[in-house]
Length: 150
Image 1 (cartoon, rainbow, N blue to C red):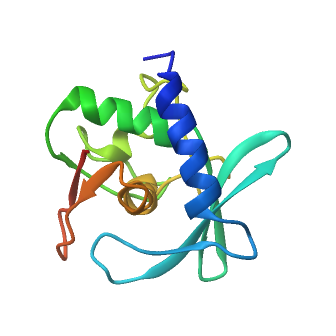
Image 2: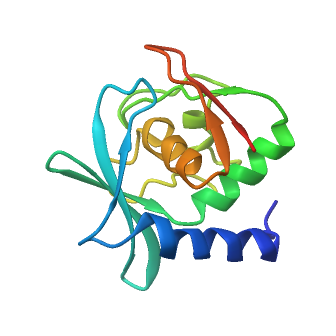
């Protein structure tokens, strides 16, 4: 999984330019239970492509490549996968998107979250973005939400 298919990388980059937007015009999203609003936009920080997630006054950063890596993993998984969102300081439930997003076995060898202390909640904020980009389906229950690749 180290090498991403070129067509997928191009598709994601084009979608980001068109849909994720900029700091001035971010994409408005809702958490999977549809209980909280947040925004997401694409940016470059210190030469690295990032997703900037703003929840109220809190700003989280995720490595841009998480979109292609997660999509590829979900395609290989082939079925629904529980999101399992958790703060950085709390353990993630095994077998969840959150656990994968911080696992030493994922393509980046650890956290996709880039802001120390705020690296968690990958399973809360990245799945709705992938759904908005047409890369995944996400359930929208009060608890126990799941996702799968499209």
